Length: 387
Image 1 (cartoon, rainbow, N blue to C red):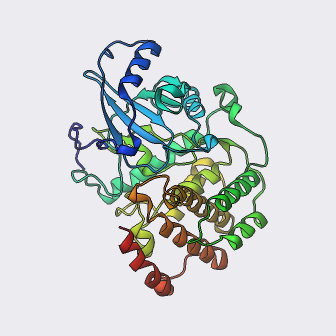
Image 2 (cartoon, rainbow, N blue to C red):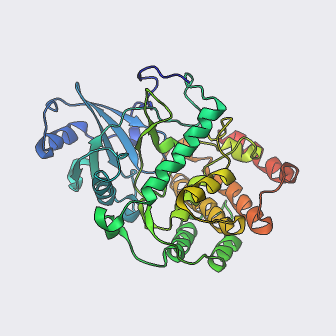
Image 3 (cartoon, one colour):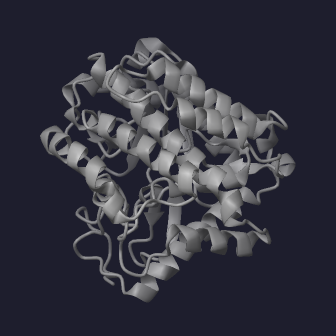
């Protein structure tokens, strides 16, 4: 494992701003100087770059001579304000910061759409390593270190789920009981509204989810998009988390729903080839815990008992929810609201996730590799063409 000081190559790389995502940086710089409590060192127009790893809200690096700031805004052409609520995202992190060490410092929020064309907010940059699809070239983890990193990944989620809602003020985001029911209905409706003619209906999966909802569990504060590539790791000690990013979907809810959503992204080395193609985090590194081991570790840390039969609902829901997220983004590409070619293959993700949900519902487990011959034969040529 490399523990040398962070350099530009070790940090999450920012790139030239895509033409369709550009904005008037001089107007933003002027607004910041007028609205920051401490505008020191902001008397110039910053260099601007864009982080391109995400597929939802847009994230930019504002590089001043003596400090780096981060700007977050909704995607261009976004109509659903509730899905890209900058004010809420800003408020969540502002309330979390005093009780949870892993969020950046909020700096300023703007609801004057004449500045940028949308709401936006600015925060301090958390510097460190961010893992994307694969480990950085200079970071080598032994299996025991990979296991430790996985446990740390779970530990930080447990810490979040155990925050005192009332004392922190985060209970303002609670809608009380019935969380699971609202989620199943809400994500089902989102899928119906964003479906395009070239993906499946998910009808059987939606019906199963509605019929197999668990009883309400004690609520906690949940991230709702928790992944390895949303962790910022200490550049001196990559097994130590210094920050967690992307709080746009955070809320008060069932913690097991949060874990299920997180593990929808957890592609293991032994998963079938179709799903390994869509891996976006290094969860396949030797030594990383399996999904089943993570569930067991989370249960032991929180003093719960979660049987495999109980877990099946959360696993299927997490995969379905991921399919809806992918479909919502693909919908924008299908209707030419964006030209980002990276979104083209998301249709394949949706198709594969429907098949995976169907297998879990039918058998309680994923089918062996031999049973995947037909799906792989159908999907591989299309996946290659979408790259």
